[in-house]
Image (cartoon, rainbow, N blue to C red; front, side, top):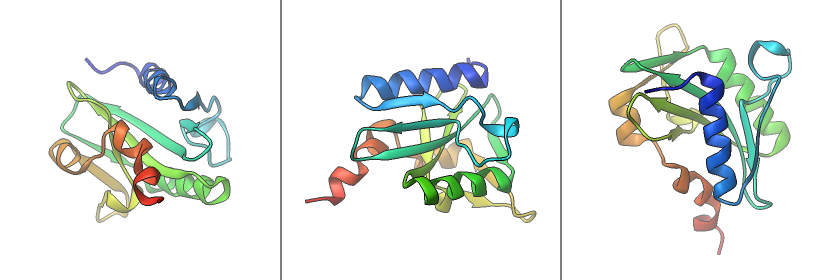
Length: 135
């Protein structure tokens, strides 16, 4: 069962802490502010992540382009890696970088469950990405 969005955000924050990342929900994310804030912000001193969280019981999810643009704007200023964190019913967390999310004809974003399962990264992959690049 997919939990309410805020419960899923808390779940992700706990998982990040379990991986030795300081993590928090941004309490003013979404429509509560005009500032471009992600749902979850996390870092360990080497890697910084900004995550827009989406959950659904459906087979696909649509995201308005201003949400992804705000995520990318925040990351450009803060120096974090931007990810869309998706939780489909009966799946683990899956993460997609904005460049890897399909655009619709109306210039919004769409993620289909099968595509996310095939192309999405798991939590261990996004938190280890820089360690694989640095030598």
